[in-house]
Each structure stands twice: as structure tokens, then as C-alpha cells.
Length: 278
Image (cartoon, rainbow, N blue to C red; front, side):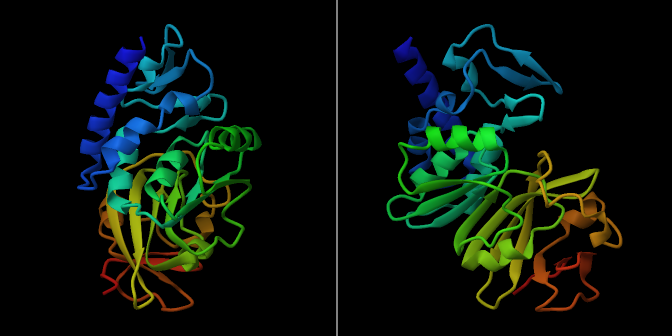
């Protein structure tokens, strides 16, 4: 069983590295080193398939080394997210040794652990989880990992520490200005953007040296709403459709630059433009 599981994890890690579209040679080893089954509730597990949960026949860890979504709390719809999607996000954000990372929506801490290993040596991860039970589980699961701190709380209402990467695992209507202000020059923010009920996109934002924020839509992404960041419908005049959302190329704080004719969507504190920040 152990040898078979080791082989399965190695094969899964190869697929994760391929899904990342990254040339970082560390990724395959990191995905192999961090055991996904150690960051889940006790098996059998409930795996999402065709919009509903199916339970695995037993607690054999081999069930979880597939590209599947696994329930952490079925009543709340909280899951350990799709591995290949997260591999692509990690490849796009390129976590580096020494990075200061904020992980918002840590769950049981699986992707927090991966980020912490990629930030080593010299880096750190500040993980936020609004659900008390999940935060406690993540704190215990992450004890073996250096430079990780788990905070139980709402990351939309606190000032984040200066960050090279903010990695968000909950749907957001508009990123709080505190997140944007926390980014260092060259810092990256990736989050599931939900500007309309029918639109769900992974959005990658990078702070430029000039103070603006380059933006790049990556892929379709559907997450549960972020507490405090997803129910402010009065913040925009017209919700963009999918084509308009995909046209976004920069993001600006309204306090630093007023919206102009390139605005795709405007919120109280931030607006999205179809023109590059450069």
C-alpha cells in the first residue's frame, strides 16, 4: 500500500507540475512532498462529481490524488479546491523563496502548506480563515511548516501586512483597497472575481512600479463568496458580462486615479479598465 501510494503521489505531482504551465523545477517536488490527505477530514471523503457529492468507498488515501474537489464542510459548501486549477494559479503567481504571502480562505491549510514550501527559505505565509473550526484545523495541520501563521478572522476588514503575493480562495466582487495597498511593487494578487452572477474569473493583478495595477483574466473560476467581499451590489453601476470582464487589463484605486472612458466596471474604491497600466 505505501509503495503504491508513493507512486500515485509522484504521478499526481507530475500532473500538477504540468498543469502549472511553469518552468519552476521545484513544483513537482513540492506537490509530491505535501500530502493532500493530511489536510482533509478523516475519510471516507465526499468528492464533488456533476454538481453533487459522492462518498468514497473507504478511507484509502489513493482516492484524493486525482483532480477532484473534496468536501471540508458539506453544509457550508466549503471544499478543498480542484488541484489542477490551483496548480495553474501557483504557476501564474510564481511564489519565490523569501516571498511574504497572505493566503485568504485557508480551509484546512493544504494550499497554504504548498505556498509556504515555495516561499522557503526566508519567506512566510499569513493565512486567514473566517471559519473558526477550519482555522483551528489549519493551525494544527500546519504546525510542521515553518514561517506560517493562521489567523481566525475576516481578511476584508483588516490591514494586511506588506505582501509579495495575496492568494484568495473565495469569490470577491471587488478587492478591498487594503489588499491592493498591501502589495509591494511587483506583488501579485490572485482572486476569483465575481462581478456578476453569471461571471466567475480568476483575476491576476500585479502592482507596477508606477503605482497602478496590471490585470490579467486567467480562466473560469467559481468559489463560494468571500465574507465581506462579495455582497456589495450597490458598488457598481452596470455589471460586466463575460466578454467585458475578460477585456480588463488594469485596476486602479479611485483615490489615485479617477475612472475614465476605459472603465469596464466602477466600484466605490476601485475600478477596472480595459487599458494597460503601463
